[in-house]
Amino acid sequence: MQRLLLLCCLLMAWPLSADEGIVVGSLDSVGSETLAGLMLRWGERLERQHPGVRLQLQASGSATAPAALAAGTSRLGPMSRRMSAAEREEIVARQGHPPLEIPLALDALAVFVHRHHQLEALSLADLDAIFSDTRRCGAPETVNRWEMLPGSSQRGSVARHGRNSVSGTHGVFKRQALCGGDFRLDVSEHTGSAAVVAAVAASPGAIGYAGAGYLTAGVRAVALENAGGEALTPTADNVLNGDYPLSRALYLYVNLPPGERLPPSEAAFFELVLSDAGQSLAEESGFIALPESQRREARALLGLEEG
Image: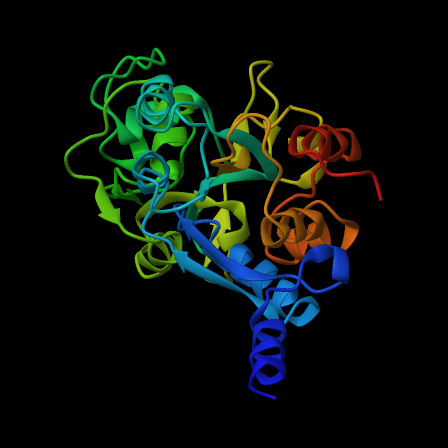
C-alpha cells in the first residue's frame, strides 16, 4: 500500500511535457522598455493558452538585455535596437555561443511636437542641429530657437526631450538621426517613451522622439524628409517600403546553445509571437507586423515547424 501511494505521488509530481499537450515553465525576460507592453500582452495570451506558463518581465531598457544574457540570469532579451558587436562578443565569451536574433515586429521612431505647434516637416540635418552639438549630418549651425529653421513660422526657444542612454530608442536615434554624433547636454532624458510624449504635450515649444505608437492627442508627429527630400509620416506603408528614414526592427535575443531545441515554454511563446494572432497584438500595440517572409525565416532559425 505504501509503495502504491509513493508511486501515485511520483506520477503526480512528474512534469508533463509538450508532447502530452501541456506546457509548463517560467519565462524570464530582461530588456527593452519600449517592448514591455507588447511582451506583457503576449505573456497574458500565452498564459491563457497554457495556464502552467508564467512570463516574468524586467523592462529597464535595451542595454540591460545583453548583460542578463551574458550572466545567464535570463534566456530572453528584448531589444528595440540591434545588439552591438561588443555586446555579442561578451555573451560569446561568457556563454560560449552567440544569442539567436529573432525579429518581433517593425517600428518607426516619430518626432513629436505639441499639438498646436506649427512645424510640419524636418530634414535629418535639422533634427541633428536641434538635438546635437556635433552636427555630423551637415547642418551649418545648432538650432536653439524655432525661427532658426528655414521657413519656420514657429517662434521661441526649443525644449528638447528624449530617452536615457540605456534605451534602445536613444541608440537608434543617435545612430540614424544624429549620424552617430553626440546628444546635447540640455536634452531632458526620460526613462520611458510615454514620459517623453507627456513632456512634449505639456510644453508648446517642446520637441521629443519616441516610438510612433506612443502618439497621443496632445502631440503631433512631424513629417521627416528622406534622402530624396520627400516628407513622410511614420505610417506602416512608409516603414514597410523602406522610405521612412527612422524605421527599425524590434528584436528578441534568445540564449539557445547550438544544437539544442527550445524548451516547450519558449517554443510556445515564439509560436504565438510569430502567428497571425501574435502579430495582431503587435499592431494593436502600435507596432507594424512582420512580413510573412521574415516570420518564416525566424521560425526556421528557431527550429519551429511550419504551422
